[in-house]
Length: 159
Image 1 (cartoon, rainbow, N blue to C red):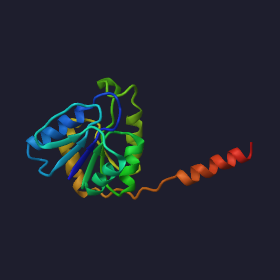
Image 2 (spheres, rainbow, N blue to C red):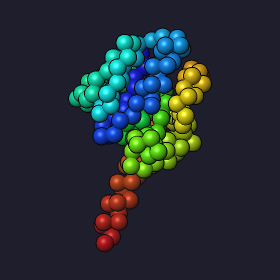
Image 3 (spheres, helix red, strand yellow):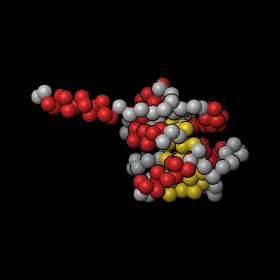
């Protein structure tokens, strides 16, 4: 199963869903596709969609997914890669009205540079990235949260 995650942003993000739909219609995606669409209205006969759901249910879908295609939100990306999933990240872009700025582009580049995810900057190239995903072996994600907490605690203790 392929899971598509658009997050909870209040701006639509049809670009990624249209690209997935084209790949389904061309026969390049044959497996079940489930999409969390948030505030984006979209329908395709072969994509099961839902807007929002409790985190526990979302995590169950993540666990079942062979591949996750997601927006470039840090929280979503880290949840997916900490589960050891193959992830394709499509950043929401300001020029398409998908976000207020291009911070997701910067986030995507960082995670891709560290080999945690496969980036998809142009949705016209989804078939190429889907092919790369077949042999992609993501680097195991290691959170830096504990180190960050220690630094903050040390800073506060020394004030």
